[in-house]
Length: 201
Length: 201
View 1 (tube, chains in turn purple, green):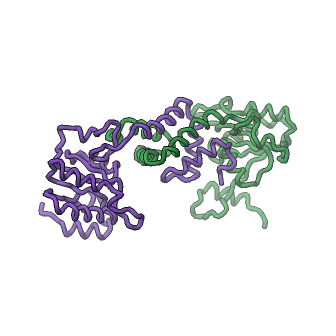
View 2 (view 1 turned 30 degrees about the horizontal axis):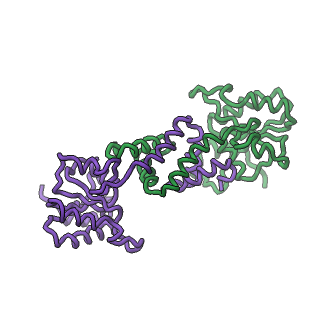
């Protein structure tokens, strides 16, 4: 272990930084030494920011996106189309869609995807709350934008099944060749689907 | 920018995390979301660790390595050979050598290497203090273990020059093919040097 040779408080910081995703012990040591060399002001700000995020950020009671004031800015925005709800797995997916600028409706964040292997069933996701919104609010379309991997597809199928009993249009985000993509590097399933769904130009 | 779509305190954390070396905005967002999802306890510990490192860790007044109590454990260790001083650029180099277990003397950390391009001259490094140790303590050998890149070599040459006037043996860490190395991936300079310095077996 690299750590033993550093002073105790530095070892403790390295240990905790290496719990972060994608951060091994060597990277953690590099980050810790950087923090040690940074200004008192920078270190204090980083330390405070970590606490603030935990204190201030909560889930929007409507869409379960991240917010500091509930409901979130998107749910409060009168200029958005509240009759279309886009369902995503994680807050980061919501942000990716917002960045694309392609969607002007509202969101619903499931906080995960169905994954029997990991013991994640329908009750672990915000599905009940989604159904609640459909029964209470005037929602015309539910656009399923869960990931296109196994868990995401299973979740979309499950939701499509659940929502069959409600008077809403259920749609799924399109699969195909990514723009700028190179066909020879693409997996067969994507390519086959893209070919099957070819459109006249 | 990805960040704008996240709540303000999260944006602030992402901004500060992305100042860390090798951490871009996307990685910073991933780390921030992980911290947000982690337990209150874990977040508090990380936050506190950052402050503690800045508060507790200082430079050893003898070798300028990192320590919580001055002098450091290595300088205090009576079982080590205090007549051999190994000169390194950074505390992380000291740790790398300690890990190797090959050195049982004491260290001197320069905190950098000569780099005229970046405005780092002899006065910016702990060279004066190294000379001070040589004049005061009973030191027989100074082993230069600065990096083998341009700056490290320049620093070693400079130190060898400076130390000429003192009754100490000045040595340099050996260059050659790394153990487990593949000749075809090695740069020409290393290979040429390794060939020139070949030894009988």
